[in-house]
Amino acid sequence: MNLDALRVRFGAAIGEVTVFRGETNLTADRDCIVSLCKALRDEEALAFDFLSDLCGVDRFPASPRFLVVYHLYSLRHGHRLRVKVPLGGEEPVIDSVLPVWETADWHERECFDLFGIRFRNHPDLRRILLPEDFEGHPLRKDFPLEGVRKP
Image (cartoon, rainbow, N blue to C red; front, side, top):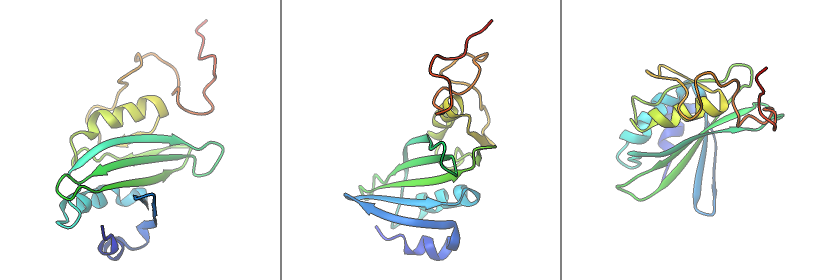
């Protein structure tokens, strides 16, 4: 899999590209995520037509605190790609990739529910696993281990 065309097209928005044990990882800037994902899907040589997973990572106390990780698969070529997007901890917000892959719908809602990462332009961003009145985001590393107690 050759990602050189993406580096030319997106320039500094594409960060480090690494390969470890056959797994390719790409770090990208959050401002280009939708256009990058469209390119990954539409470029014939790449054809990442399946978003198999989208998840959050809390790296507290590191900065930037959060990562949104997109796990992509090309049915046509049989290759995988992991795209990592760092987000600051104060207001973790990124554009929704729902216009690119419809499977992002519930993945983004889960990431919002458990980590508090907001997906701009998501049509129905609300809790998916926890009750609406649940306080906090339980997969954040600073969430109390005993949970939140109501008076």
